[in-house]
Amino acid sequence: MIGCTKLLCGTATIADLMRHDAGQKAHLLAFSTANRPIVVWNTTQRCNLACAHCYLDAQDRASREELTTAEGEALVDDVAAMKCPVLLFSGGEPLMRPDVFDLGRRAIAQGVRAVLSSNGTLVTPEMAARIADVGFSYVGVSIDGTAATHDELRRKKGALEAALTGIKNCLAAGVKAGIRFTLNRRNAADLDAVLDLVESHGVPRFCLYHLVYAGRGREMVADDLEPAETRRVIEHLLDRTKDWHRRGIETEVLTTDNHADGILIEQRVAAEAPNRLADVRELLERHGGCSAGTKMANIDAKGNVHPCQFWSHVSLGNVRQRPFSAIWTDETHSLLAMLRSKGEHLKGPRCSLCQYRAVCGGCRIRAEVVHGDTWADDPACFLTEEEIRKT
Image 1 (cartoon, rainbow, N blue to C red):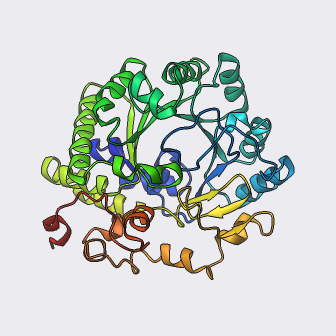
Image 2: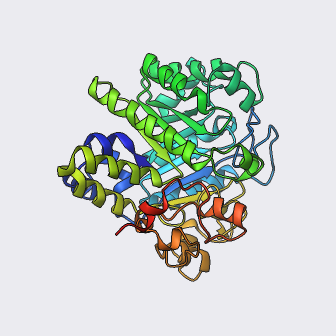
Image 3: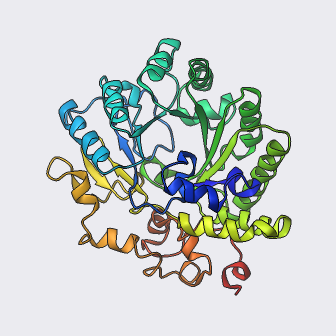
């Protein structure tokens, strides 16, 4: 995850990071060198929507194979014992899991920051009050365009209005909420309208997700933007980020799933604030690019452990057989070892030779889907040949 506001506008520094590594700065998790992952737990595959690009292929039906409450409690305890900084309760729709509040409370009681990933449509004022009472520190809600676009992608009329109401209810209950926007050809023209919504509603966080070809997202490869188009969108988002900062709007802007965004920011800082360039480069190096298998872990509803939420086709083990902590620290798993090797296994003519591979590494899932090779070039990279090769 690339902290656009922090990097571009200078609100994150190496000095801040050093204090965070001593346990004082929770908002700098992305730049921490700690080896304990943020854990995304897909608590249920059940969802009341059927989004076109859902990486989990979630549907509105329950499964008896999902972890029980007792198994979930054991997982939470293990994650807490590892001192993982964040446990993200996701789905499907996590609010459709009856024990999600008890599990969240259990995590928070042991010092784990618990957050929710929701479609927002079930967040009534009463639900928002419960979220606040438990102590969830953040609720991320997906909004992918204006009403026509969002409702089409969510495959449900009225989904946008319900999601916006859910965000308003969270904010009214004192719960920090943010908007997630998954960029693709169907909604790129709506980005400014969504950013206007963020500003007019005082939403404190906006994160742009690049499309990853996982789950139903595999059916949307043709709906991804061309790399040059993506670059123009990100350049525009950075312009909006600077404008918000200049006007004193404190909304934090982030992007995720394409670490070339960080390189664009570095280039801008080099041109506009060269005195901060060394700080930005060190922060990007500490972030280390793609976090799959390193700073990011995923556990699906059935207890299978994955390098990240987009690697659902590869299981590293199951928490019913071994604790998550044992699976995650098992260096004998070849995929984990390769993901942690910081680019040693990259084979594509662009990624393998790129001067930025230590701060990027590309998306291995996109490479696998498009090229049939996990270690090939990321087809979504928008850097030019000159940028890649320049020394």
